[in-house]
Length: 324
Image 1: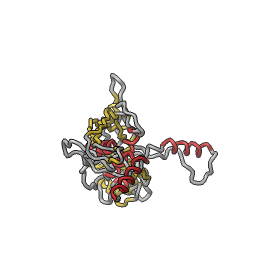
Image 2 (image 1 turned 180 degrees about the horizontal axis):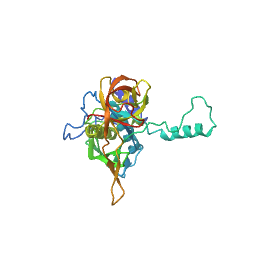
Image 3 (image 1 turned 90 degrees about the vertical axis):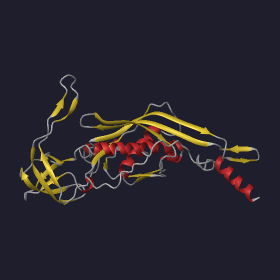
Image 4 (image 1 turned 180 degrees about the vertical axis):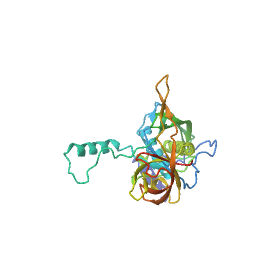
């Protein structure tokens, strides 16, 4: 009697959609090929880069109840934040922010603390990509539940997602990193929900499915690719102003990993280099070294520095970088 009651309850839950696709007929399976699924980047104490994320293009031909390209961008944003190596620049609601700023600029909004144009934080790098293949399958006859001749579930779900992840330098439009990644269900830890900048979402249950697990596996590998590539790029900021007392204020603070005692280099803005044949932007020439400052005080968004050598009154916009 007790067994039949339990079966009835389980069947009702399945029919009503209250249980996810893995609830009774086993977890998603995979043929694990390597151990690269987890980020395994460890704790990070270095300087950070600003990065934004854009929706992945869905080139796979797969269509379902979820917008896979949009969900992947949210997952990438969350995973980049989790890595502790980046300052995330919100791009999802940028249109709403611009509309609010335009309203304020039109004079139709109250003057007190209105949004001002030109104050959106920029991201030098954008993480995005394309979904090229999506595969889902149901195999085997084990598991599931049978009640009075009606069978629900059964078998094990497998899913695989292939993406081309790209890291784009927004100053030149150049793709500075690109890699093909295959994600498989069951190879990575499942995150039930995501939280970016205090906004929580469960992606409508997407991550709880085998397909969502495969997508998470892709994203974990993508973050590892991006983080390793970013280690090659120099940290950069700019001088905001020099105070009357000689303190140099820069536009990078604790949020970017700046700490008191760090020595930073002042440089002139380098010349933009363009291809004489195509007109494409190739990058920037390294600017002339103007001096060095030592960080004496930090706030969330800014830092104060003392000039150690060179220019005593660097102009606003002077490049500030780590290293020599």
